[in-house]
Image (cartoon, rainbow, N blue to C red; front, top):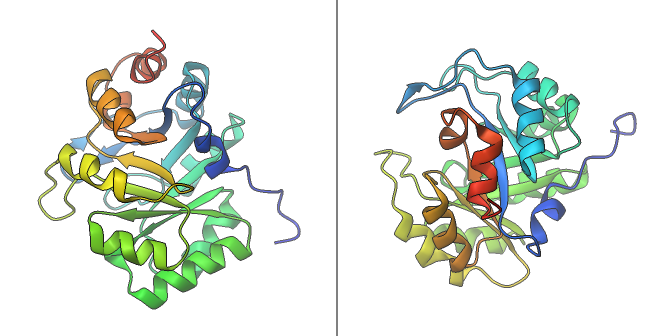
Length: 231
């Protein structure tokens, strides 16, 4: 990895809440549950709009089959801004972690529900070794325990059930106080408006990962400011 530029600090960008809750803004063309959201988006232009609106980081879907994303989307979005970027995809092999670094991501997603204990441990360690932050996504107390067992310091609580696709905000509110101090907490999925954002910020989340609300808003920059309570 010596030939690659240093990764931008994804976790560090979310840890400071002195200016309010951070927003990880997602470049998202479609979803399995909703179909096309913004199929013909320009990833570079959207990323610049997100940065101008006050986003702290970017999330870019690279899965093609389910989300219509690509590696090209990630590279275009990252090159257009100074923001750290997470590769939003299914990490199921050590090569996926390395690929994320090679394509220019600053953080990799590790979904606890999709990995066994050894995979979670090994992929998390590999990410650190090659200079990536790792966002460990959880849904419940058992998965939180597994994330903490590998010294996870960036944990996301997905409010959307991966089987039913239903959103349950109470899940995130319940889990927040169980995540130890020193761990950066991210609420994922189903953040619709400032009211949702305020509830999650009050629960103790450092950041919100927001996709559908932004790409369908018509004015993503304004929407970010509204979510953060700056407008």
